[in-house]
View (tube, rainbow, N blue to C red):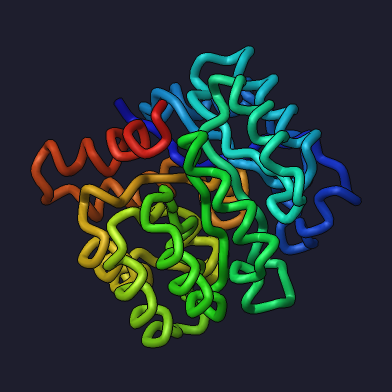
Length: 275
């Protein structure tokens, strides 16, 4: 089964989605399940995990409503305010929702490089394990030092690095990112999504050759048992179509054995998120 471990839905709002700038005009519109279902039919994808794009409980509820109406949406990674001292009661409420599989905060937008290590946030993360929910880590490379310290504190919590931690592919930066990703990957409770890469390169001129060494690194250190495919649809559409995004990963893993390919393209996501 092919599972897209990372995609988004939204009803476009220029205020709520202010992060979609003029260079991303292709995605300044609604993207809903009917749109994605057609794309999946054309590209041989069986299901997905819908990930939050807005930091409100309304976003979490919106994604859950879509998931409950569409069987191909196998799970939801929502948002709660993990810094809220009463967050445990909110987590308990959402635990009743079968399709809630994880949580995410848009840490990449936080000015504090050490946001992940703040006591109130750590307290919230400590509540996740008993509900057996995952946490998606969305950071830029300059936040990977804090990320390393963060994952060390929670050896029993399931973590996944979104978008291979968004290395600055466009600028060709590699060394600092690679050193820290190697260290983070030593923690076996941390997985990594092969997603979001073409939008970290030049939108119109990226090549698979540019992506090669970044993919080499994450597949080497996380292994095929902790890597999962994700499209980052519809954000990916500013730099390519769905078939191109999927091919970045399928072409890269084409020489692996069948079991390894199936793990990357679906089984790891199913196991990680309990889909």
